[in-house]
Image (cartoon, rainbow, N blue to C red; front, side, top):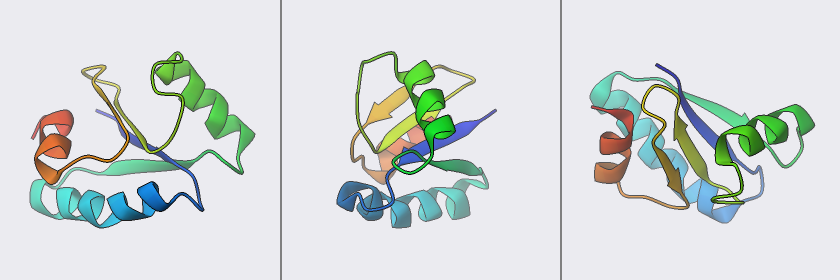
Length: 85
């Protein structure tokens, strides 16, 4: 299973989410792959492939196993549901 967090280096919403992602990883033993998209063209193309224009921004969370996504900030409960844990 691949859990991906697409983020922008200077994005304040992305910075708000980082402690919750770390909490998710601690509490559920999952690993979230973090891909910076504002300064990395390849990662941006990957984001566009998963997002398909639905969210259009960051933070964007995608679960490749369930195809569930979260657009924007989320609670720890929402992250746990998204991760399948």
